[in-house]
Structures are given as structure tokens and as C-alpha cells.
Length: 73
Image (cartoon, rainbow, N blue to C red):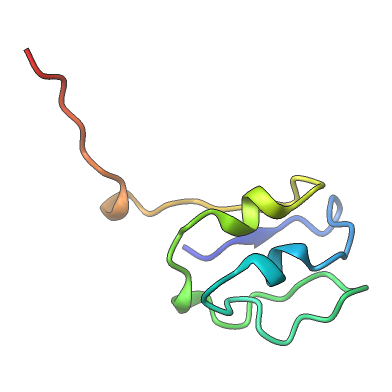
């Protein structure tokens, strides 16, 4: 799933777009809410979430990408 930008929290700084290594937010202009233009390119690296000063970016990792951990006994 691609990142979700909560427009009501967004400061329109586009720091999330600058942090994205896979250009998911390509073409986003500072002063506007970043647009997710290439959602399928998202690697779920969490860089956009960590860079956002307002906490406006939400990233939901698909269940098939979540690692399965088991406790060793």
C-alpha cells in the first residue's frame, strides 16, 4: 500500500518527497500537499514517515511483506 498523506496535518514542506528514494511523490511542489504519483514504486522503507515533521504521512505495510517472527525455545 502506498503512503497516505493526511492533508489536515501536512505542513506542505515536501520533506517526505525529498526523503523518498523511489520517487513515489515525483512532481510534488513545496507549498502544496505532496501527491503520491507512483504508488507501485513504494518499497515501504518508512523514510517519508520518519522525515515528516508533522506526522502527516502514514504507511501501512501489506501483510505479505511483514516478517514472521517466532520465539525460539
